[in-house]
Image 1 (cartoon, one colour):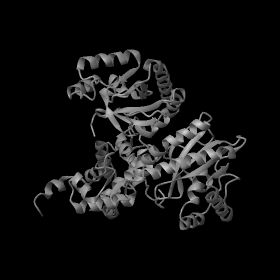
Image 2 (tube, helix red, strand yellow):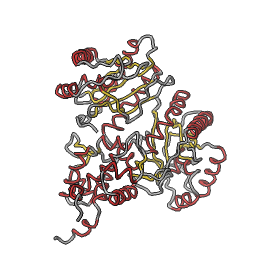
Image 3 (cartoon, one colour):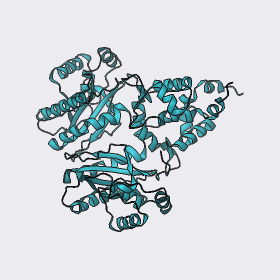
Image 4 (cartoon, one colour):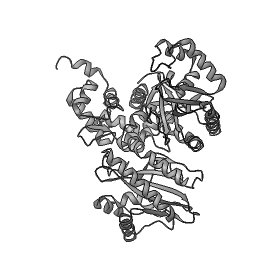
Length: 265
Length: 265
């Protein structure tokens, strides 16, 4: 036995397998064997053995560049997650209605850890400077959907979120706890949230919450459009109307989503 | 040591972990511990230990009914698969154009084993009797997208597929190898495939292939609509046009997809 192997041996195989999957990121979709070993802290031989087993299963596949990437089998299994494709499928017709009515970009997001996780989007013909992708993440306090989700999050989560610090993205980002709390109260009162160039200059959004059958605000729908748009408030009733429709539909189908975990990935 | 444990001990932990994930299906989204153990053939204690590790990671979560279901972390990682969300994101604007031009249901599918795997859909206001969901599967020889994908599959795959038997779904399903081969040749010649009540009575579709930068037909786009529609052929140029546009876009971005595996899940 070599010294230094004990930490490696202390990890369960499950934790090694999931660390292999966790190594892939939107910015790192194809990884070489060496990169995989580096990112997981596993010996090359272990990395190779586990990656080979995952390729045989279909959870990983070999990319055009010879490296590994996430395989379609994981996409297919992941689509069974209640918070992902199931929610997306339920809300999709309402998003489509909103797109048809406005021809602006439509987003659907949930809260995941300290971020807004984008479940679905319909890209409008006027693409905006900030293009979030499906399964992409953006900060809670600087986006329309994020502020709506934060407005309906448990009080102790909001405390913890604010204490972790409110990062500034533009001159318009709300970085003070008092103005943020005021904004969240306003969102709860009106049922609508606005973000005006708070994440990216040139981009504004209007968002509203979607409630599941248990009454939890499980998601938020938004329109994102160029800040040159004369009157953002004009679009609020449309966003509000489809979010109410989607909420009623989830209620009628008795659909409930798992509460968001507060862990950050 | 008890007899009967040897088969169990012969399985790698990786294979046990993936068998746990494989146990979940569109028709079985929430499974109790007993059901998980039954479906995987693992002892209850092993099932519990591995499921608990997967819950800690976020790949599984506890459902409202107390059972286990696929967690959002798997959805997020799965979205990095090139054949899934990456293809979907690239083709999405073209699907949206097709929807805007026709207001009929739009589908995007790839070949996965002996089936068409649906990557994305836009549900039209006239919903059709057959509602396929994202990540759902339908037979290759009885759908528009399926026949288009089959028409561009390797010859030996087509042979094997035909030899496995062409199941009849309606009186219109093509179940003979000669008519099917003739249809596939016609699709290759015209660039368009039709399905007329071949899977479900009352539902017709028109489909066209999407080629990646390497020239492989990696996907098919279709419109599905009620069979009462007077003239299906009228919609063919629109489907063909957007599939050409999507193919050009993949080529311009040098996007290639992994070849479909021929294994059936």
